[in-house]
Length: 463
Image 1 (cartoon, one colour):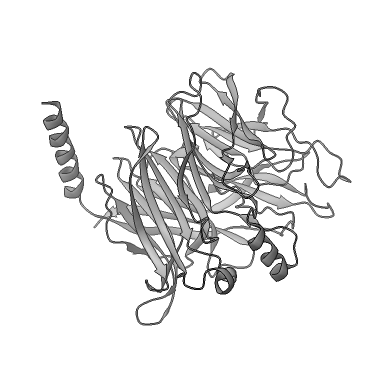
Image 2: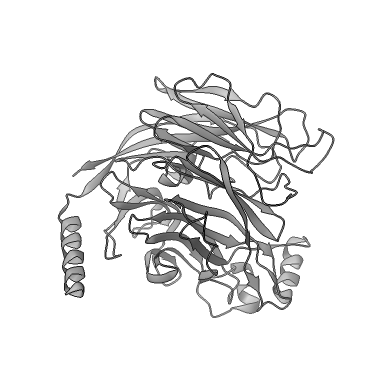
């Protein structure tokens, strides 16, 4: 009886979603936000790509930007600024008047108008290249963004010695008005701190990295640029390996090509979760994807958790490092694929390729992508495509497709942007923004002026 009920419910859900009218992307706004001076410190305005620097609260849209400090040496030679779109233009509301930092500062928000900025100011003098830093969360209100902000100091387990290389992740549960911040400690672990709805940093802990026992020299697998979701105190984590090339033969050959003593490995994708960050430890690591065998490349793109707890993962997968193909993988094809999978209770339920390009495939190559969730819970993927079309014409555009409940997807639609976004943030539910029929974008765009970041507002309209 229970099985019959479940099957009937699933059929009704599938039919109801498929019966919903198709939505088409309508570009309403497309404009420059600001132009920056490169800081040459290893991080740029979009470097924290696992979190977001863009949030929406009602009609307010805010961006966390970076200003390079003139005459200050790297690494800590930038400061944050908070911008709001008002009357069709972007205005700086506040900027850091005292501190210096290296990395961009992610944003989070609550529906009633609280805005939170994750800062990581250095504790060193201007003469120091690197050194200790103090993670902070700065609180603002959309009711008066010019008012002095509140500085919140997270509580940590033990006494971790954080630096300017935070690789931090910042997320909000908007409806529950709770926050979580993760900050890296070397190649050892992430420290995390949870802020409850009462405004207290009420739980702290460590998330140790997975162990690479199968490497030539076994080692901890540092995971960086993570996406995290906080939802009713469940926390989901998605991160990519970021370690010095572990295969000696490949490392030696890369050194011949580049002249550098190091080259980093981004080719193993890991996921973990806990059903309650305040009560349960994180589960054992699940390796979702790997391109280890052919020295490929993986970029984690996004993470969304459905109301029933199903985790949706989005990533980009490159089959190999073409520099090494002739010597090590002469028979391998070079392909690039946009991948999606679902995870339930810590196990992979399903996976699918949304778009694949390269040798033996399409000449249309997928790139950066993000999830977007509508007010009624429909799940879309917005992504970039380059290369050439079937007629041989040069291609540079954004596309939108829908993920159906049975994990299949619609045909993609072209988004008519004058300057397509190549690398971008969205106002995501991971940052506390409510599901919406409006897609807000901020980032790099093809055809924009050099070092200029752009914004677009896209409405999903019946059609």
